Amino acid sequence: MNEELKNILNKVRCLYLKYGIKSVTMDDVARELGMSKKTLYQYVKDKNELVSLVMDLEIESHQCFSEKIHAMNLSAIDEVLEIHKQVNRMIKERNPSQEYDLRKYYPEQYQKIMQVSRERIYNNIRDNIRKGKEEGVYRAEVNEEIIAKVQLMRLENSVFNEAFTVEEMTSPKFFLEIFVYHIRGIANEKGIKELESKLKLLENN
Image (cartoon, rainbow, N blue to C red; front, side, top):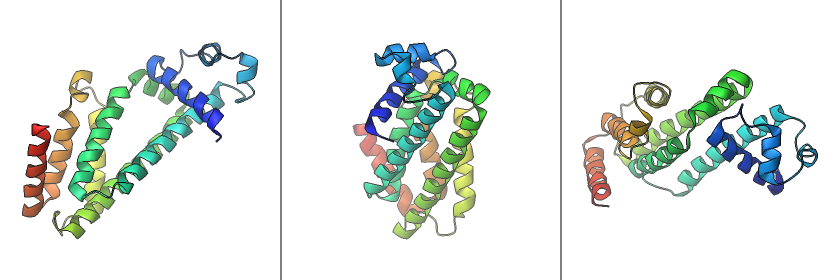
């Protein structure tokens, strides 16, 4: 994917996040990009391909996020807290109408992005548990696969249900509580002390 096309797709992604997918026409896209529809069709053959490419870019950006976190070489607990910050940011950008449109009108793309997302989140949680065990802050007997699936399910259920309002879900403390709950469930005494120390720093900041 060349940079010119990526720039176009990023602008279209912003349109979809703001207005949803169904309501954004190819005329809207061309107007936003400052080009004719004829020029736009030199990049994509139709809206289906455009949606597909935007979702591929979404997958790529999430993968880059995971790689960026990994490259920071954080401790296991710091890694979870950093992920909390990024998840909170992504939730604030989330547009339920985009997800609804994707699920209803582009089910193949919806299933693709959900499958890739689940695999990435599962692997990240599992790897973090392994790291925490190696650092001696998580309990050695924790079943990595089971807990990774439980936390994945917990995160998905938090996002895809009506038990919480948008305001609650986008509050700074919402996902922090979920992640802290997760760490306390798998940490040993050393890990809990480290967590409490880091939470005090967060409060002071």
